[in-house]
Image (tube, rainbow, N blue to C red; front, side, top):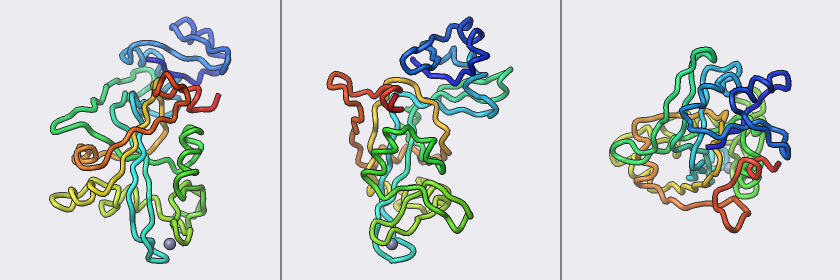
Length: 242
Ligand SMILES: [Zn+2]
């Protein structure tokens, strides 16, 4: 699989000697290898963090509704999601690697995600979100700074990220049991965007033991953002408008 890396100019010879290739058109280094080899490049994948999530095959949009806390009307709310992913973690000198499979009993999993900073969302996906939903960067009084968030379809007020992506009562959360889980998941619309290249995403990803329920009960549809009529899988270059 192809994975683009952030290689500083001063480290280009090192990346090259390890097998990275240069895409002159977009002026970026990339690797085209089995994901098991990704740890060799962990220096540029992890950077100064100790945890990296690399989405494969699909990224997702998860849509539901909630009652606006301000005007009381029903408004759409959306989250992002990842399915199967490559997880690189630990120290860059001693990295660990795992492929988190998309099929775990009793079914395929989706993990809810979000990015407080809209720059962490690939531009083409961000444009789709902004054109389709009431999402934008707004000032959150609760956290006292700007963040990318859902806003009410009716009155425009910000719908808090903390509630939507961390609280079990969120209409997007699978962290609830029994009939309530099924009822909640049945209301979800899940849009799966096929991706051609592996994609390192700096999103906050939530994990819950009920993450199989998104696909089991939600309504799934494929969302093709690729403009290549011969390939529904969107490339890194197109996703980043390069
Ligand atoms: Zn409202």
